[in-house]
Length: 254
Ligand SMILES: NC(=O)c1ccc[n+]([C@@H]2O[C@H](COP(=O)([O-])OP(=O)(O)OC[C@H]3O[C@@H](n4cnc5c(N)ncnc54)[C@H](OP(=O)(O)O)[C@@H]3O)[C@@H](O)[C@H]2O)c1
Image (tube, rainbow, N blue to C red; front, side):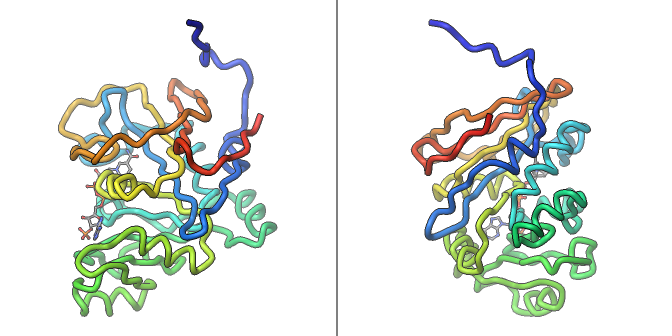
């Protein structure tokens, strides 16, 4: 059996070519869903509760390219709270490209929360009028308070049902949703068979500790199969792009 050598890398590529230029056929009933996550070699997704220690400049560049693909960035409330989320921004170049395609200059944030323990005065609500996705049993008063700074979308009776939330986004012309975690949200996306693409960064660190894995530490009902579309490397970080096995076909670039 022969194996392919992927590293050292022989040609340089612009992350925009790989991520922004990728074809993402939109399913009829929901947007294309991609997940972007970073983990240490030993599988940790956070160090002392946050992911910052895992990344670096190269990771930030790829992170921005991946963000430039998204109409909506979906994120769990716990990640918003612990990572101190702010309104998404993009480079002028990315914004101009999106505008020329008839898209909003920056993606909109959609925060999934049942408790609605989100401060309406937090920086994340300062611009872009994020979406807060919640369920019918959530606190009516908090829904009202957040309604002043966000669009509150109800999807589910006692928990947010992601298929419903995503089909509501599709009905609002959203074509591409980027999920930025955390593991609790990721596990539901995969459990509900909603994931089309995984952009996974393997960081050259060992972190140890009790951190959750990409999909948390609970079991799935079976394995979800992916195929490897692309491997990039910069500063020792590996950027792995996977597509759902048997999903809609995409055009490869380069
Ligand atoms: N390595 C990486 O790339 C990366 C990326 C993102 C996050 N992280 C790390 O991951 C950790 C946070 O992840 P996490 O798994 O604890 O939390 P999470 O997935 O970010 O958020 C979980 C929260 O989202 C809300 N939620 C999720 N599904 C829901 C549903 N079906 N119905 C209602 N609400 C729902 C709930 O919010 P309420 O509590 O408000 O009800 C829940 O507590 C942090 O340490 C962060 O640093 C790492």
